[in-house]
Amino acid sequence: MGWLVIARFTIKEIVRRRIFLAVVILTLLLLGLFTLLLSALVGNLQRVQPADYDLLLLGIGALMAVLASWSVYLQSSLMTLLLTAGMLSGEIEAGTLSVIVPKPLHRVEIVFGKWLAYALVLSGYTAVLELGFLGVIYWKTGYWPEGVAQALAMLELGMLSLLALLTLGSASLPTLANGAIAALLFLGTPMAGFARVVTQITGESTTVDRIKTLFELLMPSDALWHAASAALLPPAAQDLIGIHQVQDVPIIGAQPLTAGMALWVALYVVVLPLLGMLRFAQRDL
Image (cartoon, rainbow, N blue to C red; front, side, top):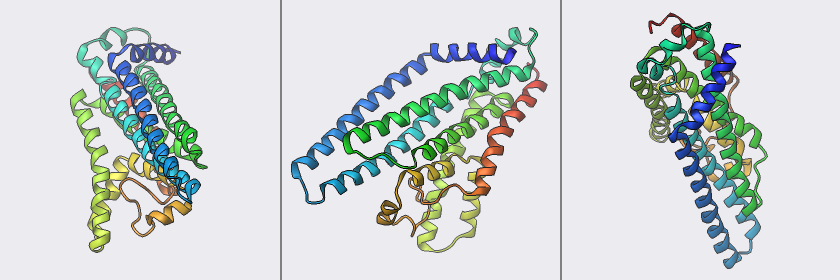
């Protein structure tokens, strides 16, 4: 049960970090500012009192649910990148693992324990943040997405896919290289999505479609976000925005996750940490 000991101590280490405390404080401030912003928006609408007030209120709630969840997706991903880029490589560079490894612990247990600790902390952070935003939206507008469970599952999988890539990278590469590669892939996927939208308007481009597919396979978190946004928006709102005409706008998606992509994500989340464990077991410390 060495992995359980590693997981417990890793969670304590995460909570003690100043960056974790700073992110928690900034998150609370962001929730407070979001509440004030939404209160002001609803207050202005109440003063005007349009004829279709209830419909407009629900529309604001639906739009804010997507925008707030997009913010959760970005914050969760940034938190994952900042905390886990040096999960193993940082301790190798600092020389702390050379003290732990000689003890009766398998290297696989060290990697699994650390991965489990980060997965638990980041999953909890993502869930609390998402439900906090949606709770504020429901309080102010009365809108609660029917697909909230599916959307939250997609957000969690997006975080776990980024964590899987960083786990493999941290077991194989220096911290800076690992963080840079993960950040480039994370940013490159939506950029490929923007390029695809442009080609849909100006004409078909097989090359751009292939590049976007390649990026999604290397970093599936963007595809998972599009599936999450599709779950948050009711079909009537999707038709009103017109995202079916231009599929998968870089921020909002219209289609749920395909079966093929779901299988790929499942393999991605499981196989990459396993490869990280194997690589770390053979790495010279």
